[in-house]
Length: 217
Image (tube, rainbow, N blue to C red; front, side, top):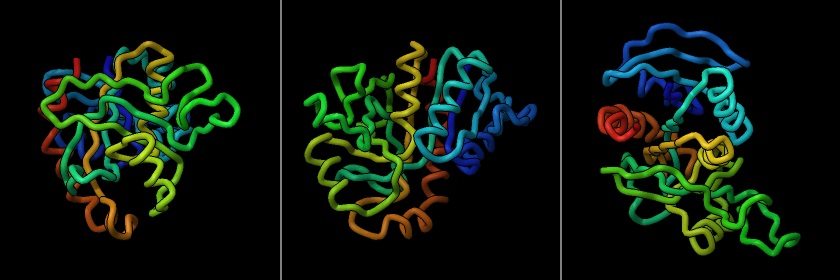
């Protein structure tokens, strides 16, 4: 069964408002909803914000809910000129930009010890524009982070969960699909932009649900 992973309840609600929710319960400290939409039944796991929460939620979905495919949806920050507010992107690869073994292993920032590339693959044969996602456990306007993301990792979007879910999915050999709606962009206070545009980004996700579910196998 498909498991949908979101960080926040509001992201889950952007999907559930288009669904028939059957029951909600707590599992391993996280909210899980059994729901159906577009002719299929699935679980929604609200994992919490950040990489550890995301990895724990994804692994729980695989182990406890017997998920045979994962879908991560949510809002994220745009860091390239084409990532306009409210636009929805399909992620084709993700990198953990706060993981750094470069001095030890002489590898590119983001390269996990067991891999030879910083980029983790995501299934992305999509009608939505494709993008590279950078994930880190911080939400800020750091110019140093932006230089790394733009000039070294060539990322389009950043969030706090996606690449951690990609790592779990890759290790477990479970298919992963990922879609992000842009809630803030470079060039202003990202926190204020996020607050001002969250509803708009969530609305874009809700509108995209039928297309997303047509692409998730």
